[in-house]
Length: 548
Ligand code: 16G
Ligand code: MG
Image (cartoon, rainbow, N blue to C red; front, side, top):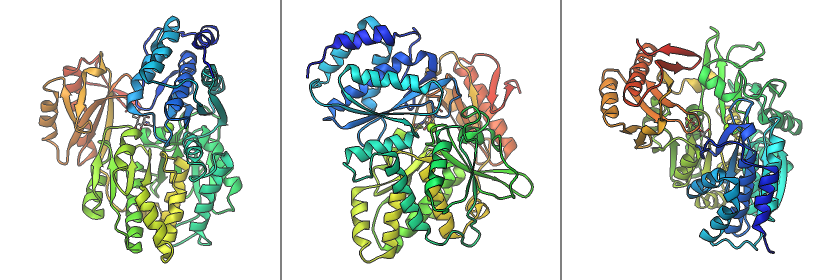
């Protein structure tokens, strides 16, 4: 097969010219921005995925068109490597350079990537593409597909799918079906079969009620949850809200619920303590919430899911009599209350890594059973090949090991999957006979607060030790330490956002008032020492003058 790189250039010039001169950077999970400027980026990522597949011997690479929890006018792209992981870190800069090169240099630039990486352009290449339900996603998906076609790769379009579904298809195809069938039906079948076997006839148990409200964020998760319900045999009673009639993520979804600490729009009137779930626009994040009998909003976030899952899995492994290493991976945003509970009560080793699924996933691979979750609800569990084969062998004689095999099937190990995570939580709560009150009672969260600070250049802030220590500007960390030492159970850190042009401040302390004042004190230090622009500290939902 011969490839004429002029096609790449001609296609780009005619159909996907670069419209913006502002540089675009590969963020925490890919490129994101206003949809109208992304056509050229998408086309080029189609080109990149084709090259990446060739370098990996023709293995399938995934390209997901989505801006996740961002507002409707935004879109973005996430690239999936053959094992279902996010694009290898060393390729992020290749992706950034390719996205930013001028149209006139595109042909030469692609030729350089090919020669630098010794890519055999005659070899086969396979790319799977999927998209969320934003109105501009089909246009951008076509741009990705054209990028693949320009380099004579094979492209398979999956249409509207959740991000975790596309990860699933990539791994299922690359393992030749060992992980499941790379089709939408194959995905539902694997998860629903495992869920229904685990549930058996026990739809209710102890305090657990078979009923929940699902906030689909008007995104893909809502559509797919409805498909799940159609295929499930009444094993879970789900009332889906924010099904897609409103704007994606607007006043609803996991990010809104977590940041605003309140119920989403469209909430029906329900009994106090009814379990409610919110997912984000592409359904790779999930949080639980409820209101109590005083109408007080309560959140059960990613830390809660992680502790529930780790506790259950540890118990199962013990019952099977297996010797498997288990670890829990968090980020600096994990509530101190959860970290104490994991270390002291569950006695599971806990690791802290920088923000972003790729970092958590990578660390979790070091354990036989690695549980990872960000507080915001991104996470999953991964089992090593060693763990899987030991559990399989034990399942010949142990009922618990057999159960564990079904649990593994229920989990989408490729990436955090809101619906799979939710089905896992439902399984565990049912098994324990718990309602949300029992779950919340396992430990107390410390009050916490996040602020956003606008600065001239957020990259002046650099961090180390999983973002918990600030290296530059010099003197900022010392100043933060001094402030923190005045607060009981105080903890605070600052980091530049990977998705927005702001610096983030996180603070927690023994009481709500102390947390607020700690956050503001640290916010003011950032403004003074890191080139703050304007006097405001942005608090979720309100802007506060820094001069307190
Ligand atoms: C992205 C990350 C998420 C992280 C967030 C942090 C993935 C799939 N998504 O959404 O894990 O929590 O960025 O955003 O990795 P920030 O850097 O703006 O705080
Ligand atoms: Mg998401």
